[in-house]
Length: 558
Ligand code: MEZ
Image (cartoon, rainbow, N blue to C red):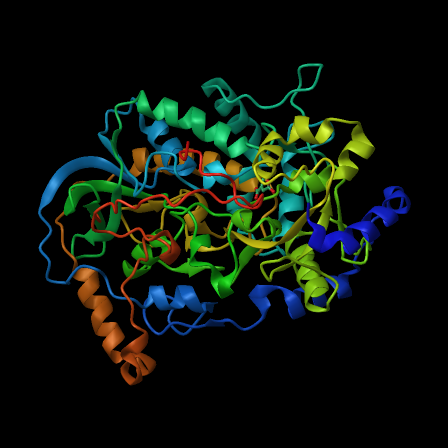
């Protein structure tokens, strides 16, 4: 197996005994700064300002996102919305934040609809592996959690949001546990806590390496038992407003029926998640297929300011081989337990628990300077020395603590307990998003937002485990704020589209070159082949299974 990397594997194995007890090489602050500026994708100039909307001429956005923000709605501005559904609260997004908001609204007497373009639970929440942070350990406190996250976020976190996140951590874990989440425990019955990059004490609770999946399992089951009406395969195409600047509902597209559905709502909570599937600069992603930044575009057209969207998180350990797993997350928890990052020459070149952005920069540098390992598919990665975990912690530890990893690689005849795996940074998280206040209110009345679609909380670099806490704390908080402030029902118009169009007609560059105008949101990644309109399922004849040990056998081909 991995014959093509034999020479480098031999170097890695030869250097392992010496590396076992050597301290990890730490970058000093000047080296860290240089790694970021020269190699991290956020710093390479693939960004521009936009000419339309509330951020026009100010902050920069990645090129792919800027194009969508200036884009055209799939709806004509003179489209006349007629309500098919009337509800009190419309939640857009069926991941952890949306489900948490729905659960919090249960019993309030308000009617609630939750729309998701895929199925309930299909979201980045289920992709989160390594854990959720909460200050529960000995010597820990919300204050310490706050300090760690602020340093990690380059000091740019919104202090109010961050304080709320950290203070609400322990109570959120209690809430999730009472719902039925089975966090790992020590033999003494206390929660088992792991360290993460940038945590000064162990603070990450986990369910092995499927923490997000476990949390979503519980949330999903709980929501299905509430009075929430769940609209699956309903894509949010546009937010509607009363013509005076207040959001009053949304126009969805029912993918099965193939027609638009207008929803009149007194309050809308946006919980549409991230945008890794925009695959900035061609990066692979660890994100769910639905993560195309739809909520950013819809909120922006309504006049919501966006913050910190020049900052994305490239998770240092995305799988780089085999090709079918490229971009998938290899949890940071593996590094926190002792798997080292090693280059093609067998050199442990940086502390694997450096901040994610610095480590991603360091890995990109190694490969750019020729010290990476080339795969047969033309990619270059560096080694994550996974067998070290069993050497350091005892045989069987890797398989026990990371069953998801073992299972995924076993399909390709790779056993990470015996052989290292190749990694390369993967587009993982949208650090910025819609600006919200401490009550999850956006700049526009009637519209709340929570979870990955929002910005400010994590500053410019989120620490591991703070996103699962974010969706829990702010999913609940957005619903509580709606309960306190719910407006009356309003008229349904697309006034904002007319305003946006007028603005765009005035924009200099757009006037000169309208060719870049695209229809947005994007809804589905290009590679998925998924479309808004239902497409006839092609009756393709299977053409036999691959005999190579790289592609797994087609399980339907008996
Ligand atoms: O919060 C995350 O991004 C996370 C827990 C990722 C991971 O490495 O497992």
